[in-house]
Image 1 (cartoon, helix red, strand yellow):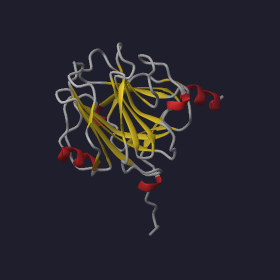
Image 2 (image 1 turned 180 degrees about the vertical axis):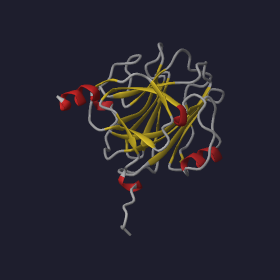
Image 3 (image 1 turned 120 degrees about the vertical axis):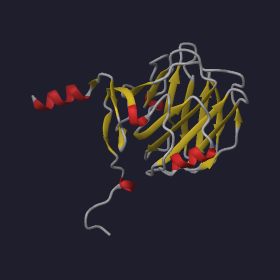
Length: 232
């Protein structure tokens, strides 16, 4: 009965909660179309510029969704895919651009920031401190409406439409979102685990979220961050 109760608790919708997740990760341990985390932004407004930063750890090289923001009018409102090692796609208002040659690694923690500015239409990725070229994306546009923000899945419809081939398997941490463009200096401070201004829309140190299915909140225990007593 204890085992049954455990799994009934594990594979269920968790009520929304607000926590300081410093030193924690969301672990998505399996290929699934049902496991994800919903994030509630602290600010709801029309967005003319965006920065999202996060860290991810995975041993899979196939296509995965790192961040999915949908609106009622655009399923791909602001979505970031890792298509393969070094290759990313950013979608805004259902239009996408590709970024190549970025220095990410398997079975390592990777720091990633993405920016978009409506006034210029320029978007850019930063991976482990290295900047991509700037790409044109939706100049003069905006993100309007109550956003549905999800980690672990890609939304093909507002809050749903999930598929196993787009899911994320691994760990995500330190997710922040701003309604402005971070400076290169601020991006480097985030990358280097230094002090930086937390996101005013999503703040990992004060995050409201809910989990669906098999998603675990745990301490950061990735092998590259482990130290064992008595080991040189």
